[in-house]
Length: 346
Image (cartoon, rainbow, N blue to C red; front, side, top):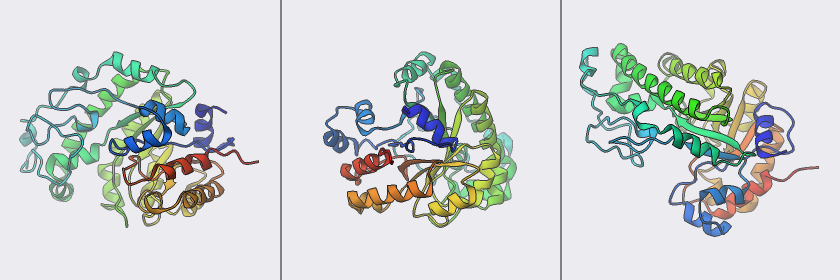
C-alpha cells in the first residue's frame, strides 16, 4: 500500500498493511531539532524522512492585515493580526454590541481578494501523489466568534443575547464557505481530505454544554462538512480536550475522523472510544503530547503505539495528540512513534 491507499483504508475502517500515521504540524521552534535529527533541511524533506503518510497544505491567504486564513479577521482593529499569538479572551471589537445594527461598522474581508487560486493549485500539486493530501482549512468559526466579542462576552451573549452571537457566527461561516470554495475549485480532484474544527473541550470536559454546542457550533459544522463532502473529500474534525459527549453529534453531522484523541483528557481513553464509536467514525491521535512524548522514553512511546494498534486494528490514524509538535518533544520520541507505527506486523 502507498500512503494514500493506507489513509483511505484506515479512515474507512478497512484492513490496511499498517495504520496511517501523521506527523502533524511541527512548531517552528521544534523544527531545527527535528531537521538535525533526521539530517534534512526543510519540512518537505522531514515529512519524507519520517515516513509521514500525509502532506498538509495551508490555504494561501494574504490581506492587508493577515497572512493566514485562520487570522483573517482584525477583531482588535489595529491593522495587523498576530497569527502566532492570538487570544480569545481579550475584548474584541463587538464587546459592547447590543443590537444587530451595532455590528455594521465592521468591514468583513472578502476572501476572493486575498486567496491566490494559482498558488492554491501550486501548493497541492507540489505534494507527492502517493501521500494523503490534506487541506488545512481550520474554518474555526466558534473560536473566531469568541474572539470577536472576547470569550466571556461571547459566552454570555449565547445566553442573554443569542441573536447577536448568531449574527456574527453566520457572517464568519459565510466567509469560510466562500474561502473554502475558492480553495476546492482551484484544487479540484487533487485533495483527499481537509481538517476543520473548533476547540470546544478542556482537560476535564466541554467548555460549554452539549445543548449550547448543538445550537451555536454544530450548524456551522454541518455546512462546512457538507461542502467538503460535495467535493468528495474526507473531513477530519479537530477539537482539543474532552469532547466525548458530543462525538455522537459530530458523527451525525457527517464528520469522518475525530482529531485528536487527547490521551489524558477525561473520557477520551482509546479503548472507551473504540468500544462506543469505533464502528461509526474513525479517529486520529492517541500518542500523548502532554506527558509521554515530552518525558517518556523512546521505548515508552513504542509501547503506547503498540497498545493503540491493538485497540484499533484499523480506524485510527496514529499521531501525536496535538497537531503542533512543540520544542519540548525529543526527536528520538518522534522517530520511535513512526518506526513503530510503520512496522508491518506478520
